[in-house]
Image (cartoon, rainbow, N blue to C red; front, side, top):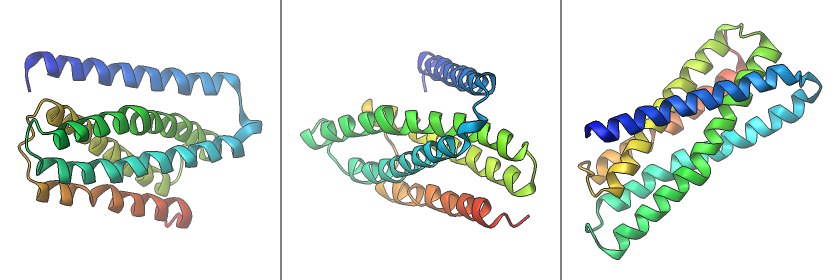
Amino acid sequence: MTKDSGRTAAIRAVAALGLTAALVGLLFWLDLAAYYDWIKAVHVIAVIAWMAGMLYLPRLFVYHADAQIGSDKSETFKVMERRLLNAIINPAMLVAWVLGLWLAWEGFGFSGGWLHAKIAAVLVLSGIHGYLSGATRKFAQDRNTKPARHWRIVNEVPTVLMIVIVVLVIVKPF
């Protein structure tokens, strides 16, 4: 990673965190407790969209890794990956985080072992999201060094995290 691309990634990360914090703050300031069920519904919709993208993007990488650099196929994958990340995955993650933090506070006061474990799993999922974002940039610059097998394995990580998160939310085992 070059110095400039690292700086750009850091600026994007700080901007995303700032936007998330501002939106969460706005939710608290507006006192939307009467809309709890609606907010929860939108949160679930955002999580579904985020997960759909997190499951699809590494699958695109599996096929892109085998495409000849500069080919029409490779260039098509670049467009698909960029649009998926920017139009679906990133906005869905932002909405899921903002509404999820508000729901955790409003519904549970951030208490409960299951909730702490869920937040930890969502943090790991967000880290995978960051890894996939970086990979999207590498593919766009024709700098991917990972084989298709790597992306097949990475494709399973969001699935495992999703299962853990759903069990924690529904069963609340502790």
